Image (tube, rainbow, N blue to C red; front, top):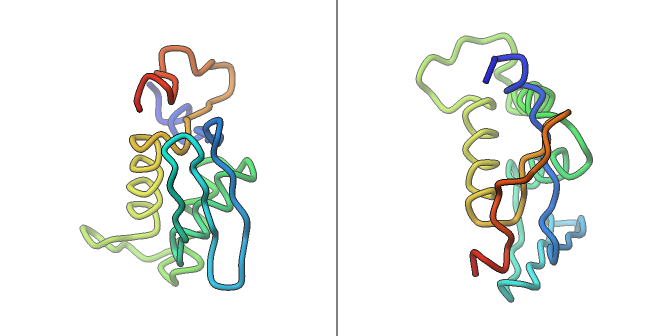
Length: 116
């Protein structure tokens, strides 16, 4: 996959997953796995942007700015880019989000019922 297509990656919530922004973070309710979780910063910011249709590149840019490392070369340290990618990959593995890229369907991904 080319770098351009990788950066255009977007996400969508899995069926059965609901969320609401609260004063102290974001509450995620997973009806399929019968669990809930409250996300704090920076996870709450990543979830909110991903679920509102922002692509990976814009999430990384925003998180770099929020974390104060915009324009800095952080080397091997945990930058906004690394954090955003790791968080999103974890949620995909857990079945809370599915990747969605333009002109690419999500066929080939197992349904939540197959995972549980």
